[in-house]
Image 1 (spheres, rainbow, N blue to C red):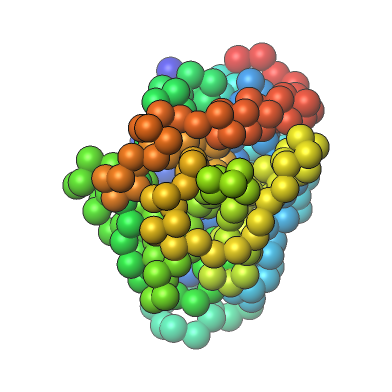
Image 2: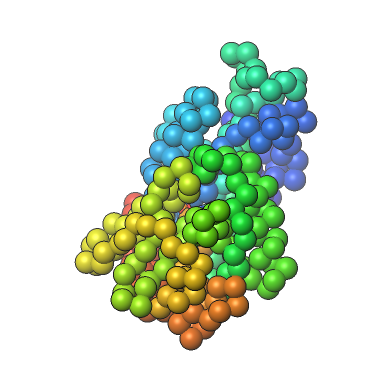
Amino acid sequence: MPHYAYLNGRYVSHDRACVHIEDRGFQFADGVYEVIACIDGRLADERGHIDRMRRSLKELKMPMPMKRENFHDAIVRLLKKNRLRNASVYIQVTRGVYKRDFPFPPKGVKQTVVITARPFDFKNNEKVKVGIKVVTVPDLRWKRRDIKTTGLIAQVLAKQAAVVKGAYEAWLVDERGFVTEGSSSNAWIVTKKGSIVTRKATSDILRGVTRTALQKVCKDLGLKIEERAFTVGEAQQAQECFTSSAVALIMPVVSVDGKKIGGGKPGPVAQKLYASYMDYVMKGKQVSWKA
Ligand SMILES: Cc1ncc(COP(=O)(O)O)c(C=O)c1O
């Protein structure tokens, strides 16, 4: 089956989809990205993701390269062309191609827009059933973590450190010993007293779209969330830990730096939130195509 990618308005074979060597995304990581889950033909929180992309672009002084509706149409067409109803959809927007120099290129240089879709079986993710191991690493990132930029080297190093230690995710820790977030997820704990805790969304972390959805889900379930920082020690003493992200959804954490959490099994709160989050996504509008 041919696999297509969207590249600057065209649907091209994924194998041959190339961006120029002078692209500022390649030269400077001068771009932003978004990831949207398509679950059974529903684009989970599409609006929230496109809103965040608009904000990320604005913070980097870039305009939206096309309207929200055009992004929607491009994503749907790409999914159709690839015959996918369960996929992770990646959007990358860079400041475009221009001879290498730090200041912005002149007006008129077109931004680069790439959209790719990869099959992903969200409903049968084995990791959700058994939980994941987390290790902690120092947070080496810049001070604007609220912007979803393609500059992800600190996250690459963090994730690799996790893999080397047999873990799946790395939780990043600030200079004061507090967890900021995961390398590609928001971090949550459930304290022994049953309080659900996640860090406040300032420029210290990315305001996860799944995190925002979970806040609504918790409200509907009558569960209160405490927005505050927690230490690695507090996480290790917690009743439960979990992560949230567009691709991994609500993922139970069964150990932190080798310390078992909840007896090493996914906890009831994370499982309940996973199920409720799925219900929330399933209530979303289905985009109309059959794979
Ligand atoms: C650093 C970081 N934090 C949090 C998240 C979760 O965000 P979302 O729920 O929008 O996927 C991500 C997702 O990629 C991330 O990279």
